[in-house]
Length: 116
Image 1 (cartoon, rainbow, N blue to C red):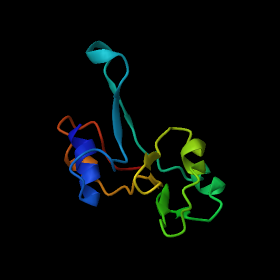
Image 2: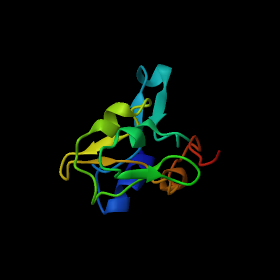
Image 3: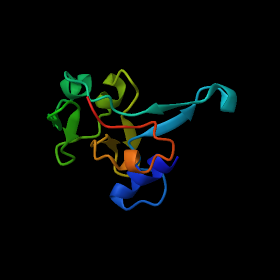
Image 4: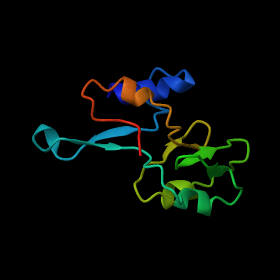
């Protein structure tokens, strides 16, 4: 979970409240784990459903959130086919991967990488 902590630290949070990456069990230690993170879609469904255009296309795929325009409707969360948009309950805004690479730097197993 060090990748999740590293991601959340982008916002100065010591916990996992603002992590845009999740590591979840797929059936315990025997079956392993899966990483849930933005897949940098070239035609993002989350952006298409945003009623205020708070999400704009990011060069290389994925989206960039303009939180000033976000009204907290949550449509983007529902539209993501990978379940990779998480929710900041304090600010009522989505938590979306910025593809900064911190998770990659802090993954002790080398299973995460940025690239196309």
